[in-house]
Length: 104
Image (cartoon, rainbow, N blue to C red; front, side, top):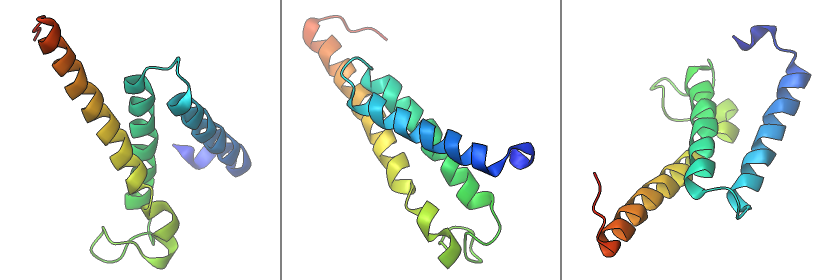
C-alpha cells in the first residue's frame, strides 16, 4: 500500500503524526482514552512494519536483527498505550462503583 507514497512525504507525515500524538498525550483537553487509543494504533502499525519487513528480525521472527533495533524499541510505546487504556478503563469502572452507578 505504501509503495506508491513518496518516501520524503511519508517521513514528514510520520513525524507529524508522532508530534500530534505526543501533544495529545500532554494536552489536558484531550481525553486520556482517546490519546492512548491513537498511540496504540500508531505504535501497533510501527510494530507491524517491524514484524513484516524482511531483515528487521532474526530467524525466529521476533528478536530484532541489527537493522531492526531502532524500531523494535517501539514495543515500549505500545505497552505504554495499552497500560494507559487499561488504567482508564479500570478507573472508570471504580468511579462508577463508588457513585453507585454500576453500569455494564
